[in-house]
Length: 358
Image (cartoon, rainbow, N blue to C red; front, side):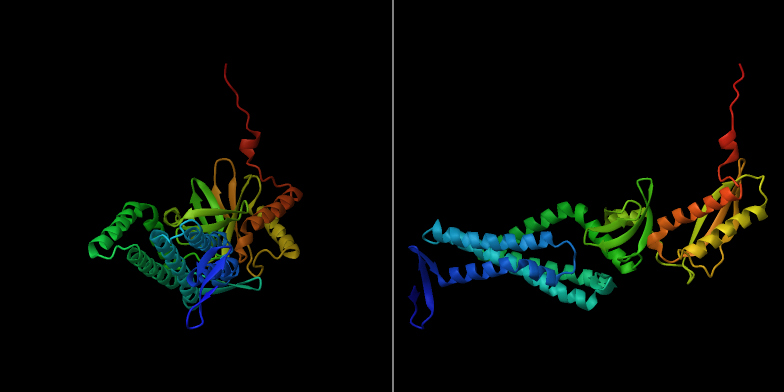
């Protein structure tokens, strides 16, 4: 161990290998940050999935430690290019780290707080997402310029050429990322579908009822209410689907839902209405699924060739249980129709026989 005239340690020798004070400091700080990567990232972000972010921070710390050890153990004379590479890795690490810190305060200031099951989360808004992008771009430019300076590209022509190559790559790939970023900002700015809202859209010919989990930079994560699994949809594609937000009611009554039933012409309107009213009376006495203060609206929807199509309108506010409420109500009406000897099957289609003339 060698000390300077001022009493500071200049170098540490371990097993015949000499580490400078700077080497020791870099390795020590990197090891501490490597161990604290998980709690730091969890403190700076409310996202449930932090694996990628934590892994990125740990990989950068590992590369910094590896570069220092490689320079000391393998390149005994302290290779200049390994030193520059280590400095570039440090610049990239702190650019990412500072970006996360700034974005944390941006989200707390401009994000939207939500309380869900005694857990407070912060979702992005148009302002927080826009400012986060600006911060990321600024820190990215600063990091690139700093790395170019470290690598020795000091002249305007050299630095401009390197930045031009990066700009060319971004321009050639903008069709893959720019529409999703812009669409994500538009979705957040319109506030049409926010985290937790139940939306309905047609995806590849299939009607999807889903709850918005999170609108991210390039995609939106939704929870399919039918199959109970997550769906990842590109922001640009989601805007093309034509979204219906079921959580944004047109009136204080709630979401106006409807069920359709095909019933034989042989049954009068009064008989059919009384059957449906008895079913809803039983529903209201056993369940709390709908807004009971509003009577169900029973209407003739269509008078077809085979049967009368009846529409039953009712109001609900727990839209996340939309599908289970439909199934529940159909089961009650089916049971009451059997007790009332009113078939819900389309008569002509069920009993039709085809005669072929020979």
